[in-house]
Picture 1: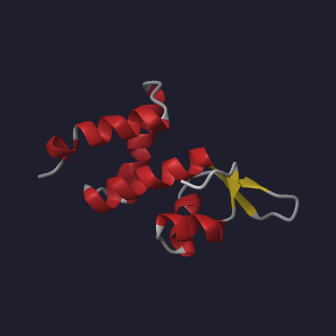
Picture 2: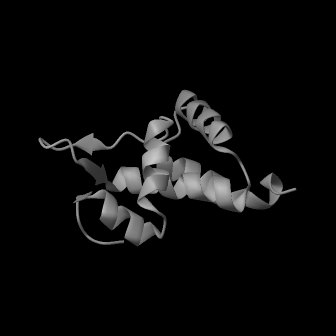
Amino acid sequence: MIDKEYFYIGEVAKQIKIHEQTIREYEKRGLIKPARSERNTRIFSKKDLLQIEIIITLTQELGINLSGVKLIFKLAEGSGMNNDEMLDFITDNMPEFQL
């Protein structure tokens, strides 16, 4: 990962290898909430990048749709799990999630 504190949407898309529109869709559905600059430009933190990586893991590797991802995030938040703990849980238990 690049050693920066904040990233713009183009940098995030390139780094994670997804389209900018996909990131916008995640925001539209309430899965991520990037900060905004004075010019209303999205600014992503390392936490946001990890959240996007979790979304990609859940959707692409486990086949969960975005509504399911949103539910998983709510359950994890309700149980007090942070993003690192959630990603560890998912990767440690991935064989059990797959059909």
